[in-house]
Image (tube, rainbow, N blue to C red; front, top):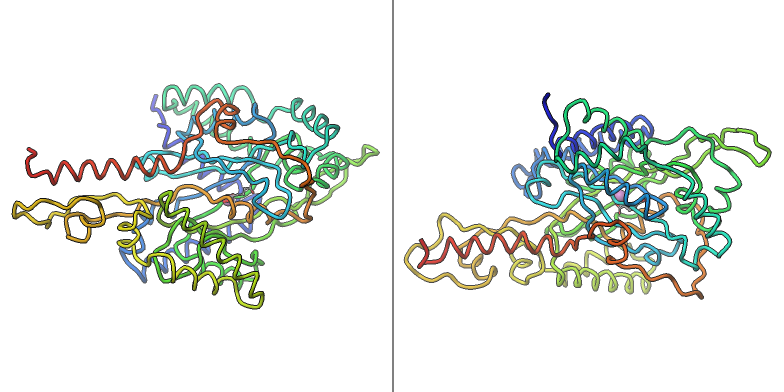
Length: 463
Ligand code: OOG
Ligand code: NI
């Protein structure tokens, strides 16, 4: 019997999830269509340069999803399902104070980690875990009701988890099992038709719409699915032209004349979806919840720790200037700040050690027996190597917090006089039972490996 490898399972899962979400949220299909049109136009206009940060095949198929779970136990089950697809937890994001509104979660992203796997299919899922024990959001009484509610539900059928373990262990599944696994996995993230207990949902909603979406229902669902676009400003214009109301900014770096770095994202507000509700008298009525939305993103070059520190510094500078000049467009302020302080070319980013690249020896490098210089900046400048950008595969906490706002109607409540529970990557690793990997380490290793190969190839005393 033929078998299906992990990456094919991952690609098939992403595709089926996309089809399912398109049926459930038709505006998502519009977003995918417009993204495709923009990508085709960019490819036509820029040619090979358009594929510098990933082949058009990869970019067209590329999606990230977002899900939200309630307990470490549920998170461990999610890790088993994504583990089957060759996706591992990368990065720790604390969203609890990243925004003005109350978002009581900490998050990670499950994704493939090595270059070849990413090139095959980079599907990733931003995964958030509710924090019922943070006293700024939940008092003791609500916390215990919430924990009891979560303990009593099962998000994933045992058969799905068993098939997941098998796929993870064998790195493939026989065709029939693969089909069963994919069906169960997609179904686990569909919107449930089970009536929502309205009083309970509203109790949680007073704390946070995100808390209600996670802990107010007995199932989970995909919250959004995000295509990748090569020109997000153009996409924003075209969506607005079609009458779709987008959030008022593109999150992340500004539109500027330098290279695309990190991640730029935007979204449209969550749409009202009909949901069955059980009233306190036990009647089932049709209500509506605004939970799910559409997001789109453009990806750029991964920044080093130093580059990221500069990014954060510029963000703070832009905030400060925007506060001082409330009439000036934030995008214009940001562009001016960036054009002044951020190196404006790939080569300058590389020389300053601000961004990650894969370095390769140039076939036309000096062959006169001279010794190569040290350091990627000089190697590049003197024509010994070329540098290909490493794409940023992760998320940004501030942008993520902005994206969460897309489905927050009210502000919710957060009692800032109380001390929040401390969480970090080590705590999350323990909760998942798998190490949460550090994204910088992954990029660093990829760059290091290429520089080691360059050193070997350029060593005049070598074989
Ligand atoms: C996740 C929000 C964060 C992103 O792309 O930054 C996110 C959520 O709404 O559950 O998906
Ligand atoms: Ni997202």
